[in-house]
Length: 511
Image (cartoon, rainbow, N blue to C red; front, side):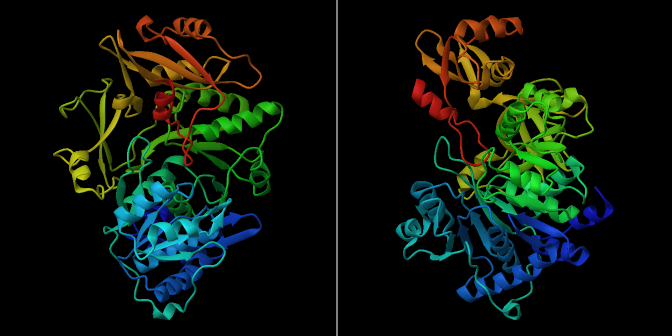
């Protein structure tokens, strides 16, 4: 990290970070969207005017403001304006509907709710009226933001350790949990990401995921620290997004494994060309990365790929280093930054030595402060303050983390534990498999049977179970881990944020 970026990373609050960057490089571009841009200086100036407009609506420090907005310059301005006031923000993914949104509004006790009106054919204002009548002030914040005279504002908040963010877990198996973050925890995560990727002020980033995801402020911190811009995508789809990547000379792209696969698919349409000539780095996290995806991106696209490990509770845990070895980049999740403690334990919380699989536990400034539900918070942390992730993996002697699955993603067949991720990584190496998810299904004789659900690669015939088991045997997979059932699907079910596969839907469908 450069000396300037390191100094900025010590900011106590988001607004302090904005003011420092605006003072350093007011005329450099912060955000690009189509023909529109926002400089760092304009972020500070317009952010204060929007904050004053919100103040006029009655928003005060500590008020809970929920917002369900697409990835737009206006959304970023609104979010930073709320940091200027010191309100508590509760971002909601714009694809969520009555059930999830109603839950978030009730649990957070939102006093204000910003919506985009009608967006992509859905009337968010009508939904807000159904859910928030007499409970929250609803206002639209898409094309027009509140505006006012900044002289009405009190001094900006100076306590970066107060809870000012409520993010929502995906809720793929139950109601989502409200995750409590501070400015400092999110700044710590963004600082670590910026340092790990070794980016410079000459880079051009891209934000193809919802800004309402916890990765939104994470990425914004990186831009503020290094003073380079990012291209925003209100709705991301391939190949429609490619002209914008080319037009603005994007050098860093990604989001998660699904995004890497989309870029690879475009590359394979024209193996001799480059979909984005300026692209030099794919980076992301939030979902498992099969080693073959790394090798294919480097081999076919001529770019580097660095993948990391994060979650809503801890947006940045580990990250691959572009200068690391190919083996480390392909086979591990990278190393933790300074200040992030990773402990691998047995089921009783006893630390395990390097190379031994166990549960991943975390402690550090980037870790959330808990959940809205006090009982969930109490269950999430051990006696020494480590967050219990539910992920399974091991640390190498080098400090690199290898994830091997989740406690809930272990298939128990005849009393033997089987890692779904191990089988998935090997399936990705088969030319007929475009993507794969391995699940356990109830079986009266074995407890659970191993079921592989795959998308086939374009232009290939659907794989058969004998073909895939022969492939897995040849790769050295133990016989007791071989899938007993194969399902070929047109598309695996995914969430709308980082395109994670929703295995619970597969279990419901095929059980």
